[in-house]
Length: 283
Ligand code: HBI
Ligand code: FE
Image (tube, rainbow, N blue to C red):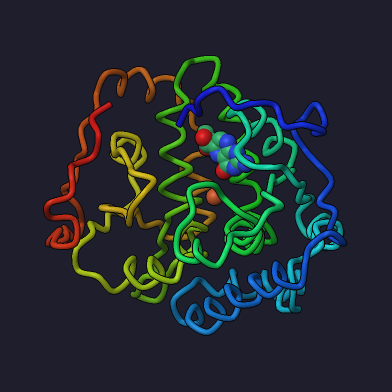
């Protein structure tokens, strides 16, 4: 999703990173992290893929307080070569892709205020670090995230960022996985949200569609509400195999101009939750 011209942040480096300045966090900010962490840690076991919980342990994220990115990066680097760098907020697409292509995950350093506990527009440190970082310990997912960054740099040259951003949205942010005949959460946007961690698995309303690259890339999304559709993968290895060595050029050309919601699904929802909301904006 192309961002309106973002203003270059005061004091940031050329790659938009800033020091995390972990010592500057207040006790209230650490307490906000603990409040969010405890709520999710209590409800995710049995809902989230086990690799997510393993990632929390590997990175010792179960310790109280906002994690120190330098410590996370040290452990992560040993596992999959990734590191976590701090940014003040959203960064331009190209900058974002460049970091991912070099195994650097950009994480907001700010944390939400109590009144924003259930929703905020920009990714804060809880969304980025609790939501995204644990799965970077998983080799196939770590490879997928780097491949996404490399794909983003190519898509940028083809003017196809919007189509590729849907792939990120419906996997990295809002993906579900089949596991032992059941569904499990893995998308960061879901696992960092109490409400959507319930809705995405338990509510009858949303579509749950087996992963299909073209159908996924046709399906638009909204950033301000629970998803109308979730896409379901079989494994991170399978997701990687279906995307890493694919030349998306022909796919982008085929989809050009199309903007069909293609909501028919493996398990179509009754859409009760979304009844009355305006339909997805047409591209
Ligand atoms: N910047 N900090 C930050 N975090 C994101 O998740 C992010 C971003 N810029 C662009 C972006 N995501 C998406 O538009 C890309 O997937 C295209
Ligand atoms: Fe995110």
